[in-house]
Each structure stands twice: as structure tokens, then as C-alpha cells.
Length: 138
Ligand code: 5GP
Image (cartoon, rainbow, N blue to C red):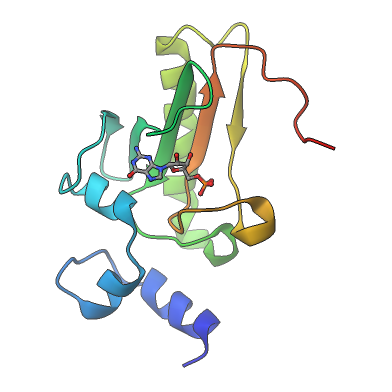
């Protein structure tokens, strides 16, 4: 099956660790969501999970992920809108709790190789706590 179709098929299935196909595309983020891998989880509800990045690039660096595996932004569908919207309301809450709301912060979501995506389970980076400079290096 072509890769694109294979991904679409997987994204319509809920995460189930005992399914061979799910295991093939799962990342460490699924294990963190299920609390099978260690992470500093700051927030979790039925749609999303937020945890500290293991290699923080700023004083505050939190990853917010949908609980359901969506590999890239290219795989997003209308049915994901509730979870993706929740990423932003939780990002707002965590930014306030970490005292970076007023000075500001950056939300980043990378897509595929040119976007610099390393982990193929979409995630919103919440980065702040210092001046972050220009958005892109030249
Ligand atoms: P990307 O480049 O895909 O947008 O970002 C992936 C992020 O995930 C990186 O900032 C990286 O440090 C973080 N990361 C990768 N593996 C782990 C892990 O096992 N635990 C945590 N907490 N963060 C991870």
C-alpha cells in the first residue's frame, strides 16, 4: 500500500498498543501518553497531553500533543479539530502558569523534513522564558 494511504488508514484508528500497524508507526510520544515511557507530564485530559521537552531550547519548553496519533500536519482532518483546538487552550493555560504569558512566547509545529520534524506524532512546541529572536535563521 502506498505510504500516504497507509498513514491515512492508521490515523482513523484509535491508538491500541497491541495492534501491529499502530506499533509500526508509533513514536515515543504514544508511550508517554500511555505513561509507559517516562516524561514530566504537566497536563493530560481525554484529548491532549503536555510534557516537558527532553532537550529544552529555552527556560520553558513544553510539548503539547494530541492523544491520538496524527503523524504530521498533512494528516490532519476535520475530525481532529477538537484535539487541535485543545492544544491551544492548554498552551495558553500552561504559558500563564509558567509566568511567560505577558512577555510572550512562541508556538511551533514542524512538518516533515524541511520543517525540521523529528518525531512523527504532531506536537506543538511551547517555548519561552527568554527573548527568542527572529522566527527563522537566514
Ligand atoms: P520536532 O523536531 O519533531 O518538532 O520536535 C521533537 C521534539 O521532541 C524535540 O524538541 C525533542 O527534544 C523532543 N523529544 C524527542 N524525544 C523525546 C522524548 O523521549 N521525551 C521528551 N520529553 N521529548 C522528546
